[in-house]
Image (cartoon, rainbow, N blue to C red; front, side):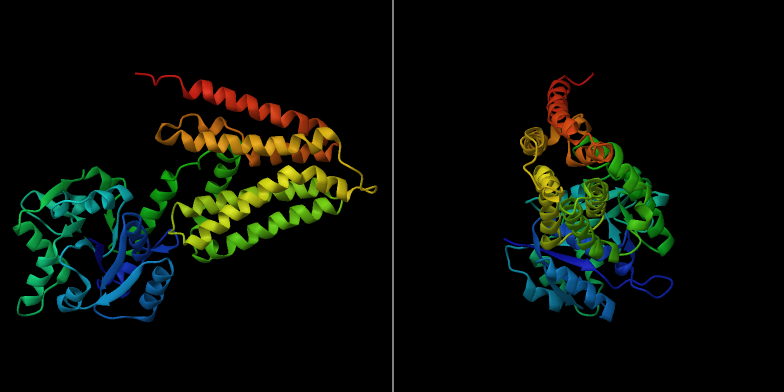
Length: 404
């Protein structure tokens, strides 16, 4: 059994553009839909189109590069050959923006299902199901319904007719609260001002970014201040990885040239670049290559922290061996940060007080002034002890029972 999706991409905006190509946080709606569908196991997306403009073709090519097959369809007869008897078809309304939990609920195995919500002022953009319910923008239907639609004479709207067939067959109804539409977690983007409001709401709700005191308390708040600028253009996600990688290469080059303090300051900027990449990943569907690039840059930055004393020694006039307190404790500091990351990931859904844990950003922020004032050896001795204390404090607090 395969999961196949039918995504609407034929509705137009008042300005004449396609609704599916409206950008929210620098990413088109159909690309976000494709990412959510891929997360729940969809491998083939049929795009319901009335026409195929060049910009829609370009977006479909980008989706294909992320490993999802995309086929434009204009009628049910085009859709029938794509579906086997034991497949399941997921319907995604044109212009829908919804959370991953809603896609996951519809994609669960079982009989056909329809996401429904209440009939309120905020849900007027969705198709009415009955006197009190409206469609929530997602549904799953059985292949025989597609064959039935293809056999019907005349021209029919594929999405809405399949939805009606699912309603008439008694498909399960999965209810979602209308309050989710007020919060912007689910919406039909009917125009560009609505897209701007959803983008603003998304920026306010994004999390501060996982583990680490330096990242959670300093880097991510700074990145969030620049959030509206970062998400404005899709080019930001394209150029940020190479710029961040160059910053970390500059850290190694400056330190090996004898400008250690300047290298540490550039490392702080490199940490901001990594935080910005993590921030953007909350809004955009990343390809496997982008995800690997972020992991490689993060690993290179951690290796630089472990080898920093040797770079210092290489950049010194005499090029002598680094002091033991630096050469031995810098790798210990990097290992402690790796340990903190492993503990954080093992905590799973029960993560608490994760902002207390040590991270590389905290280390670079503390190393920069120490290098400026010639206290590098002392700081290399202090940082591993401080990191271990943070881990012990986190373990103590994370095990405390929740307040009732």
